[in-house]
Image (cartoon, rainbow, N blue to C red; front, side):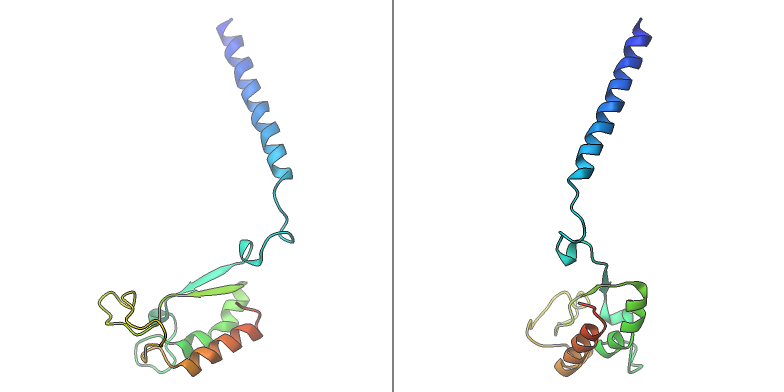
Length: 125
C-alpha cells in the first residue's frame, strides 16, 4: 500500500513538473522581442595580455583592433574591454587614477577611436 502511494505521489510530482515546464516555455521571449544584449555573444578582453601590436610585451588597443576579424569569425557581437585608463598599476590597472584618459602603454585616444570605428564596421559593439 505504501509503495503504491509513493509511486502515485512521484507520478503526480513528475506530471506537475512537466505541466509547469510547458507553461513556462510559452512565456519565454523570442530573440526578436529581447534587447540585443540579452542574446548577444560578449567577449571580455584584458588588453595587457590580449594582443601586442608593437612588440613591447604589453597588449594594446591597436592589438585589439588587429584581432577584430578573428573575434567576428568567433561570432562575437560585442567586446567588453577591462580598464585601460592611466593607473599606478598596483593591481594591474584596476586602480584607476584618471577615468578620462588612456594609459600610454595601451595607446592613445586616436587608437581607441580607430578601434571603435573598426569594430562598428564589423558589426561589433
